[in-house]
Amino acid sequence: MGRTISWGLLALLAIALSPSMKVEACSCQYSHPQTHFCQAEFVILARVMKHIPGDSYETAYRVKIHKKFKLSHEAERSLKDGLLYTASSDGMCGVSLQRGLTYVISGHVSDGKPRFNLCGLVMPWPKVSPRQRKGFRMLYHHNCVCSIQYTAWHNKGAALANGARKQCLWESTPGPQDCQEQHGLCMKGPAGCSWFPSVAYKNCIKEHQRKREEQWAREP
Image 1 (cartoon, rainbow, N blue to C red):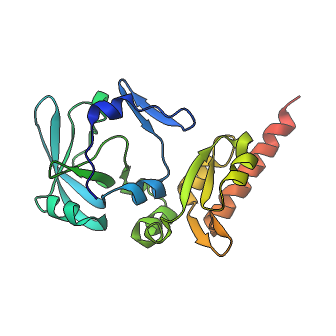
Image 2: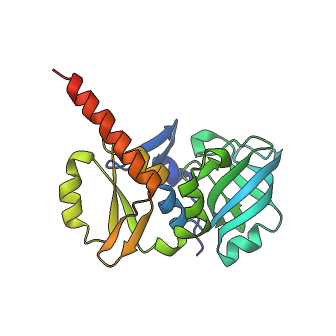
């Protein structure tokens, strides 16, 4: 699926009901890793070999691809040279990678080049949780029929009522936002889409609830 990235459009992006990352003029919706995976043209595990300076608009990185989690036909062709392109400045959503590190990177193809930016996935592999690794390898792909909607924790009830069982709610803090990001897999079942209750997810939720109860107990 071809999709042209407009850096100016990305710079103006602002979504009021979602958490966002902002760096000067760059504004991005903060999305769940499963959402990034499902919307991307490519998701790869790659080691950064070299930074290749470009011009005032674009720079590139030479990478060694260790794993191709997801590739469109166009992305597969564009990645044959082992180059990834990003904007030259973080104000245009450009990303700085560290040589020698291995990242999970998602992106799209524009003008025949594989491009990535701050609005996609750029995750150092050591920081990717075991559940996320399973997601990238297989589980996210099989559950792209489900969507993940960021929801203010106090609006959970209304969002569930309007979701038609086709989405999982990613609850804002003080909801279990971190648990759902690190350990959550939105999976389709007989009753619709829901968070799959893995051991790590259940343990995180229990710890989250314990901390909230302790906080409530300290409040006057």
